[in-house]
Image (tube, rainbow, N blue to C red):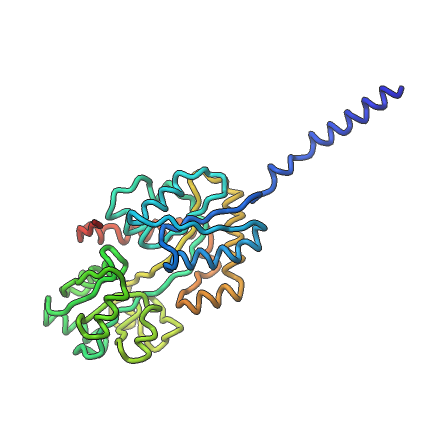
Length: 327
């Protein structure tokens, strides 16, 4: 009888274990999560990743580490994400340059549309059309008239070949029938200094980088390249208001995971991102950087997938028609 009771106890315990899922198979994440940034430390994309990572740690209960893998026109970092195991522990942050312009200008070892699973759209920066204060045009309409009457006489500084500022300048020329000289620089800071000193006439640049100089009168803003005004400088009109509807571009960010990552893990990361973007302190940090947080309905994987596809459809023809190539 004793052996039979012992057997029944063992059988009952075994059956209970069999009916209970293994805890380690349920817990996600069970270890630190890594965000791969294809930019150097200190870049806007890196800063965006670190602000998110700090807050996501609270939601996930695990450290979220930002690892910088710059180089190759963003290829090294993106390739690292594309090759990573789809186990939910590798994320990739990207933006307009890394996930739209770079694949249009360079041969890349991944399909930017198919090898990454979207998680969420992240904060973005608006772009301004700006000029030197002494330029003979007081507003965007006058600027277009002047440029049409003085083809190839004006100069526009480019913060880098293939940058948003470069593509915006070409897009503007195509939309207005104007032509001006494009002057490439190694970064936006040098171009901005030459604009302030009057060495060049125009720039198409991130509004947040220009704000202090606009407020001091060193740079003249002509328009925001968006369908809405920027709260930090609400007196600057949009291109739509100045007669160029649809001439929109922004330096947006997004978060992706490797192709094949389970939907449940992607949903867990998305929830952590949504929580982070709803946090008052996080929102203030992005506002201080001059960045806009997408509304809640655009913080879904489906919204990022659709937006990314639309951006590729819009900008790849412009980039390829201009034959822009990175060295």
